[in-house]
Length: 167
Image (cartoon, rainbow, N blue to C red):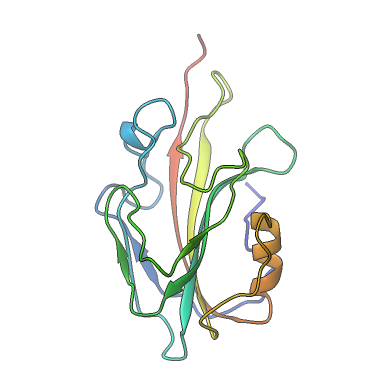
């Protein structure tokens, strides 16, 4: 399948992104779904480049029937000292949550339409060479992706899936 959210970004070294709540390619827990708790899974990362000064975190569903996918979460300015987020998505105070596709500055859980098949959810942590990205309030996750181009030094990705059976 295509529509990887990072395919047009520069190639950079990879590092490790893991969750105690699901493994690469596994189904997301029910409580991550938008209709069953809407909680972000735990995430922890390691092996980022030494030049890392901050991180961004995005969650993207390329399989949403929109023609452009669906951004569930976009967070910038996560301090380099942060290497883990607990279940529920508690963020450090310096982190800035951007509006997702629903216009909400929060994590929005998986919610594929009934009968639409399996959807992939890409959790991506990008390591940056700056502490702060100068992005205007109200900017979209697409703007965040554009702003990464000159500052990304590493990337970690973890993919989970969800599906809603037809009624």
